[in-house]
Every structure is written in C-alpha cells, then in structure tokens.
Length: 85
Image (cartoon, rainbow, N blue to C red):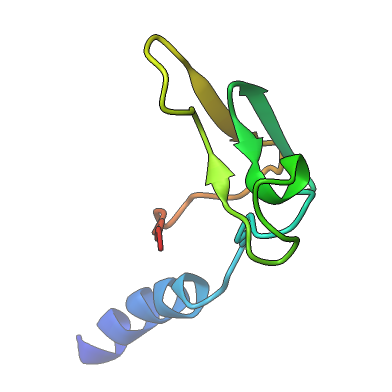
C-alpha cells in the first residue's frame, strides 16, 4: 500500500518543482505578454530605468482598466502556484 501511494505522489512533486512560466516585468519588453488598455511596463515608458521597472495595470486615475495576458499555453493538470513580489 505504501509503494502505491509513493508512485502516485511522485509525479506531482516533480512537476510542481518545475517553473513553467516566469516574468519579472523589470525590462522594456515582456515577450509572450499582451498588455491592454492602461497596462504598461514602466521601464518601457521611461518612468523607470530598464532592469528596475515593473508592471503597472492602471495609473492613479479613476475609471481605468488594464490587464496583462500571457499568450503561452501551459499545462495545468496538477494545479497552479502564482507568486507576486
């Protein structure tokens, strides 16, 4: 019984440790990402230096909308872990 449990859990553990997609948005470009409406990379607009920028979805104005869409197909068979810094 223990051997069956280990075999069933092992593929999940090895898959969960893989990084399938990573972007820090610090540069002037974010390949495979579509930024819409008010969304922008601050390094691309000159608000920050390249390498120290970030993703800004909206400015400090009312009634704005912005989002970032990733265009890469990623298999989510074992779940998803998203981290923000």
